Image 1 (cartoon, one colour):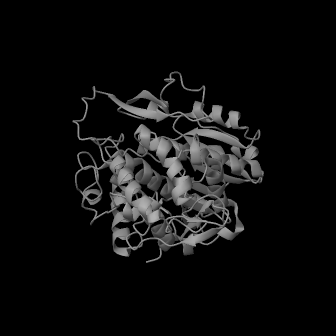
Image 2 (spheres, rainbow, N blue to C red; image 1 turned 45 degrees about the vertical axis):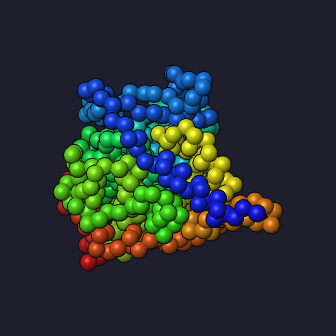
Image 3 (cartoon, rainbow, N blue to C red; image 1 turned 90 degrees about the horizontal axis):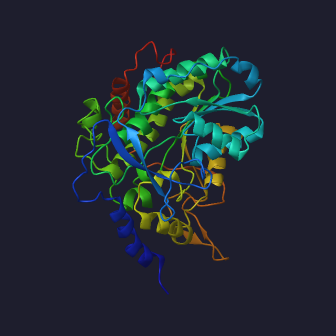
Amino acid sequence: MVQLSQILAVALPLFTAALVPPSRKAPVIPALIQKATVLSSPIVEGIKSSKSSNDSLTTVELPEQYYFPKEKETPKVLGGVRIGIRNLCVVTGASSGLGLNCAYTLAKTGRHFVVMACRDVNKGKKLAKKMGFPDGSYTVMKLELASLQSVRDFVANLKAFKSARPLNNLICNAAVYRPTDPEPAWTDDGFEMSMGVNHLGHFLLVNLLLDDMKKSKDARVCIVGSITGNTNTVGGGLVYPQADLGSLQGLQQGGKNPIAMADGKPFFGAKAYKDSKVCNMMTVSELHRRYHESTGVVFSSMYPGCIAETNLFREKRKWFRKIFPWFMKYVTGGYVGEIEAGERLAQVIDDKNCQKSNVYWSWNGGAQSIGKYDKSGKPTGAGGAGGAIFENEQSSAVKDPVISAKMWDASVFAVGLTEQEMVTVPATP
C-alpha cells in the first residue's frame, strides 16, 4: 500500500516547482500598462466582458497607477441611521472569495452592518446583490490597498459615513499573490505589490482606525494569516521557498523601488507573499503588545484552511489549479470551501469564544499535520473542512520579538504615519 509520505515525496517537489518563476526573460511591458490574469469563478460568471471557453483565465490590463485622487468617492452620509444598533464591521477584499463570504455571513446574522471595502465598487455591489445580502445590511466603499492615499481617503469616507458612532470590527483580508512574476510589480507608492497590499496597506488602515475603535465595546481586529508564513507547518516549512525576513534590510531602507524584498535580496514572487503574511501575523502581536491593555481592542490572526480554488491562485499554472484542489482534498485533507472559510473568518469576529487577544485561530487540527483519514475514509486534519476552532501555534520566526519590533518601526516609517495619526493612549513599553 502506498504510504502518504511516499505520495508527498513526489507531490511536494511538483508544487514547489510551480512556485518558481519561469526562466524566460521578463516580457517588455509598455509604459503605463501591466498585464495580469484574473480567474473566473461561479459567483462572478457573467460579470466579465471577455472569457475564453477553453481557459478559465482572462487577460486584463492593469494601469501602472492604481488610484487617482480625482477618483475619490463622494462620502456617504447618514450611515448611523442605516447601521442602527448593529455592530459596524469593515471587511477588506469583500468582492470575492473569503472576504465576500465572510461579509455575507456577518450580514445574514442581523447583528452586523458590513462595509465592503473593495477595489471595484460596482463589482462589489453586483456580487452583494447576486449573493442575496439582506437589504440594508451593507454598503460598498472604494479601497485600493495599492495606494496609501486611497487608504487615507477610505478612512475619511468611513468616518463621514458612520458619524460619531465607533467602528466595532475590522477584518483585513484582501491579498495579492504573484508567485510566477519574473519581475516585481509596484504599488502607487513604489512598494513591491505583495508587501504593499497585503501588509503595508493594511498596516496603515489599522493604525488610522484604532483610535476610533478604542471607543467601542468588544472591538476586534482580525488580520488574515497563512500557514505559508509559518515555517513550523508543511506549507511554510517544506514547500520552497520559506518565509524569511532576514534582518529586514530592505524594509528598513524604505522598501521602495528598486528594493523588492523585505530582506533586501533579489525578487522572488512566492517568497514575497510569504514574507508579507509573516508581517501580517507579527503586526497582530505588536498591536496586542502595544495597545490591547490600554484600548481593550482584541487583535487576532487566523488561518481558515486551504481554499484551493480561491482567486488567490489565479496566476498559478493551469495544471496546478486543476491538481491542487484534488491534492488538498484527498491527500492532505486540508481543503476547505470558500463558504465555510468565510463562516470561519466571521466566527472570529462574532463568536463570544473568540474574545481573547493575540491568538492565531485555526480549525480541525491545524495545518501542522499533513493529513489523516478517519474510519469512514474521509480526509481530516491540516485545517480542512469541519472541526472546532482552536488556538494554533505560530512559528518561532513569527514570534521573534526583536524582528517584530523592527518590522513595526520600519512599517511606520514606510507608510508615513505621524504621531498625531496613531492611537492617542500610552502604548505598553
